Every structure is written in C-alpha cells, then in structure tokens.
Image (cartoon, rainbow, N blue to C red):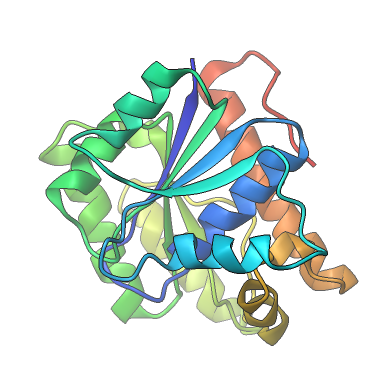
Length: 225
C-alpha cells in the first residue's frame, strides 16, 4: 500500500510546499513512484511549480508527478489506484476539514513552522487540536523548522516551545537561503541546489523525513538519499 506524508500548516509562508517538494524529489530519486497532491485550490503553487519543472531540462521528472487534490477523498482514491508508492499532500495554507481528513490517513504528518512566535503558536495550536479534538496519534506528528536564522538561541527557544507542548520536532531544519527560492522558481527543490552547504541541509531534511517514516513501520525500507 502507498505511504502517505501530509504537510499541514495553520498559515501560509512557513514552508509547507517547500518541505513537500524536498520529500517528493528525494523519494522519486530513490525510485519511489511519487505524487504530490496540491490541496491549495486557490493558489495551486505546487502544481505550478511542477509545470516549471517540466519546462526545465535540468530537472528530473522520473517517478514524480503533481496533481490537484480533486474529489471527496483524493488520498483514498490514489491509494486505491495502486499507481504510487508515495503520496505527499501539500495542504492548504490554513487548517480545514480536509486537513483533518488528510491527517487521519497520513503515516507521517509534517508541520513546518518558522521560529517566530507568530508562526509557532498557530502551528502548535493546530497540532494540539489534531491530537485532542480529532484523535490523531501525536507520535505521527513532527514539526520541521524552516526559515531559521543563525541565531542559535532563537532556534533553541522554538524547539523548547514545541517540546514543551508535548510534541516532537525534527533535528533537521532549513536556514533562510535565497538559493532555495531561486531553485523553486526554476521548478527545482532545495535538495537540488548546486551549492554544497544549502544542498546538504535540505538533503538532511529529506533523510530525516525518511527516518521518521521508517520509524512508524520499523521495516528498514524507507531510506532515501
């Protein structure tokens, strides 16, 4: 059966689509047939990103697709089709009833957030609601820090705030970097930039996502590079 990763956020601009693309490119490169379901009907940013990717001769599109999240339950539909090893939901830039539906079907729920309180507090509230109101297993939820600065104290405080809420955060994180934006403008993902350090950071995020998913199944078959 297909594995499902769901990227959710309570607000826009925190890196939800960025994380979805990093994971999708990594799994596709590892030979997993992978689809991103773009659930943001108003903007369709991942769908448009894939259009740019198809126009970029340097971008690899083998085993990677992006589609609008259409229908009542697109995850269930794609799982039933058996066409994909990995389904990645790029959720809307706010919590919706559909967000809950996707979360309930996900093997791993990723919540990207910046380190500022304005980003952290809505993200934590959403995660707590998923757990306490909708019965989502908190062990399937992982926060991913994005747009991090070089201020280690700021990052540490963000991590402490998440852990203090009884939630978990991945050790891998993304710093603020113009090269990531340039890459996505060209239909690439942050783990495809030509610069060593930024690429390694994004690759570490992809590997950490794979490790978190592997931990849900403990079958040793989820690794990606």
